[in-house]
Image 1 (cartoon, rainbow, N blue to C red):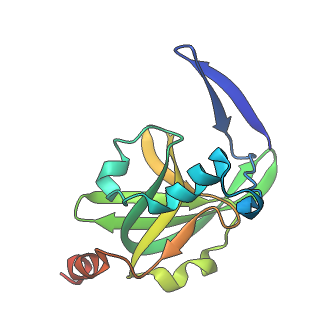
Image 2 (image 1 turned 45 degrees about the horizontal axis):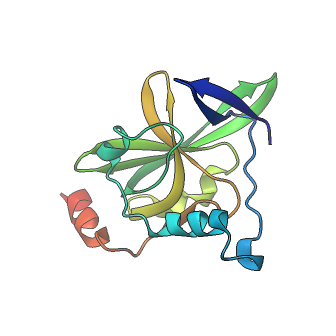
Length: 159
């Protein structure tokens, strides 16, 4: 809902804005449908490092891992309405990356601080020339704390 269709170099794209809403239909009724298969395969992607996301195209949906350094929240004016913008600040040996959410409160992420996390299905975007990711609503994005590589991230953070 509330997306715009753009054209870049002759290729049509759906562009999400601050007011966009992504709803995931119940795909269990038709697991053979191409969209269902695509959505499920996104859960199998190898996670990117924080630095690698900076080289990823906007609007790609990726998995990213790192240590949750801290969580912040700020109030922004969107269409003359105050909205809370929550930001998870991920770090790893390749750099840092902000993961934003317009629909989650910071308390939902505080227990991840100083812990390795893997966030599956986040949307890559840019703001003011800086790459970041956005958490998808509902069950779109999934956060895991036990995954291959979490021990190495914990050791990195302990240094």
